[in-house]
Amino acid sequence: MSALLRDLLTLSRAGSTHRRAAVNLNAAAQAALFKLAPTISELSAEVKREELPEVFADEMELTQLFEQLIDNALKFRGAAKPEIAIRSEQGSGEYVISVADNGPGIEPVFHEEVFSAFKRLQGKGVTGSGLGLAISNKIVRAHGGRIWIESDGRSGTTVKFTLPDV
Image 1 (cartoon, rainbow, N blue to C red):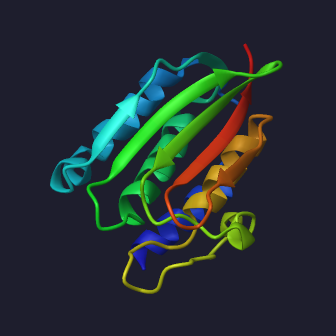
Image 2 (cartoon, one colour):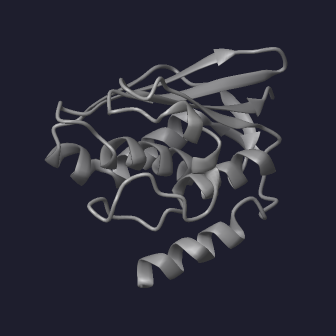
C-alpha cells in the first residue's frame, strides 16, 4: 500500500517542477543505474549505454524517467538474461532517446494503452503499481517531448522518447 501511495504521489507531481537547467543525460541514466544496481546485479543483467546528449530539463525527473524505463525492462523480462541498451540519436530539433530490452515484447494493440495509469499487461506475478509508464509519459510531455513503444510483441521492447535539442 505504501508503494502505491508513493507512486500516486510521484504521478501527481511528475512534470510540475520548473527546475530546468542543462542536464547531461549520461548523469541521469547513471544515477538511475546506481539506484537499480542491486537488481541489475541479482539478475546478471547487461546494460549498455551509448553517449547521451545534454538537454534542458529537470535532472531529477529525467533520472526518474530512466529509472522507470530500466526497472520495467528488468521486471518484464523473458527467460534469458536481461539485456538493456540505452541510445540516442539526433532528430530535427530534438533528441530521440531509446531504452531497448530483450524481453517478451508488447503486442502492438497495447502500445498506447500501457501509458494509462494502472494498466498492467502482466498478472500479479510481477510487482508494481501500474503507474511507471504513466509517470514516464507525464515527465516526457512536461518537457515538450513524446513517448512511444516499438515492439512486435514477441522479441523485445524499445521505449523511445524525445526531448527538445538544447
